[in-house]
Length: 182
Length: 272
Image 1 (spheres, one colour):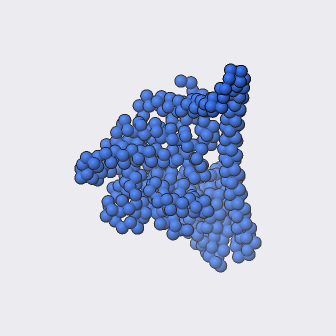
Image 2 (cartoon, chains in turn cyan, red; image 1 turned 90 degrees about the vertical axis):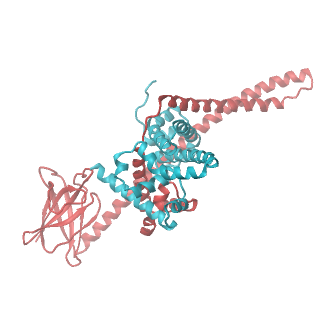
């Protein structure tokens, strides 16, 4: 495969994606796919489903790139949000299928998922350094897509404190990352 | 504002579990207040960094599948476009008798060719407009950034000017040290009456990541006081001391140190 251009500015990339340049999509794939795939695997824990999700997400990116508004955030964030939403929809569909089969079994599974999946897939020093309560919050919110009220219920805390927990977890993570770079 | 930031609403937004109402609220506030936007961006890049650690190599065949799918979508779009065209034209052709049918056929071919050309032209124009629009949008953002930068500069100058004009403030110029930053300087403004002091410098070299400049004050009794760290290029408040003799700037690790350890960058004596 020919290598044409090795580096694109984000603004150029967006411009070219909007102009439907397939090379731009390939560039996007080369840079973001492994991260997207990792997130899809973390959410779904199933290679075939994660690969389907990746493909669907790229189709959505291609078809909806017109709607991307750079004033609202980075391209990477937008792309990850599409991937995450696609993966969580798949997760819900998968759960729905199980739910009819064995409700209680699934509940037990979901409760263990948060920690277990993190342990089997790509656990890193960073994850290990997070306090368990912060890790659970970030993982439940970002990777499992529970609503704020579902999280309050699952953790047995008042709805009003969910936001505070989210803030504490992200602040802690931010400090951790700051320390890491020095 | 601080209350809004402290509420954690930005965190749930970033983690993707804000309600529709909260989302709109966050976007509205971020558009209005730069400090909200800054915090939002910081949280977002924190989470992005966290998420990036889940990176996993994708099996090679997936890439081809994705690219083929996109390629197919593009081709398909163009095919359906021209197919729709044909269908439309065909339904218009009446078939009353042979003579008319012949004319009709010729006419329809002409029409079809014409509409095909028109279509192609419009499609290209649309693409061109889209390209121009996205360029214009990114230029707009650049302009906005430039304006914000100029505004900050202007505000700093205004503050500086106000201090220069205030007779209660004494001004000390710090000269960059010959061997390390010969052309640099910094200015300390201090006001013993109100116990206030400020420093401004952007001509010292920009500190590397993880480092910060720290100001020290040497008083009559030969004691060196920590006047605090300050941000480069910003008009920053520092601690004020009675009767300082000299000011020294050193480069220290982020957040500062209790006793100077780093290299001295600039020094200045107070006019008596």
